[in-house]
Image (cartoon, rainbow, N blue to C red; front, side, top):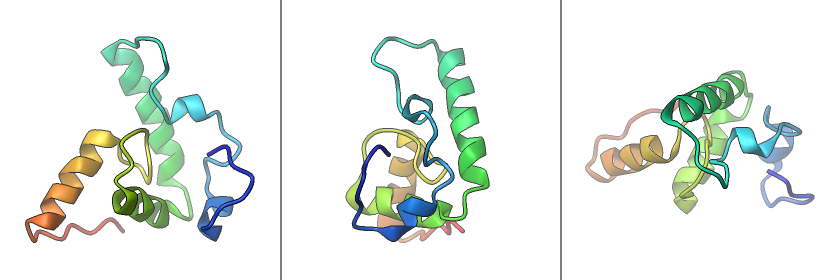
Length: 94
């Protein structure tokens, strides 16, 4: 989220703006499963109170973002959401 200009105005209102990006993305070094779960839980807690969570998630789904926590979902959760939508089970994110 370290950009100075964005095509989408919602990003300026994101709760993660100004937070350490390492919280939302897998670090370059190995992390244990427990470390990942703690990191993801902290990131998702920020997403849970974000005023633009839905816009963020829809953006990540639309561009098929392969990394990080976006809109409160990790990579695997977004892939499942995309698969459900493609099968016709349009799951609500709001």
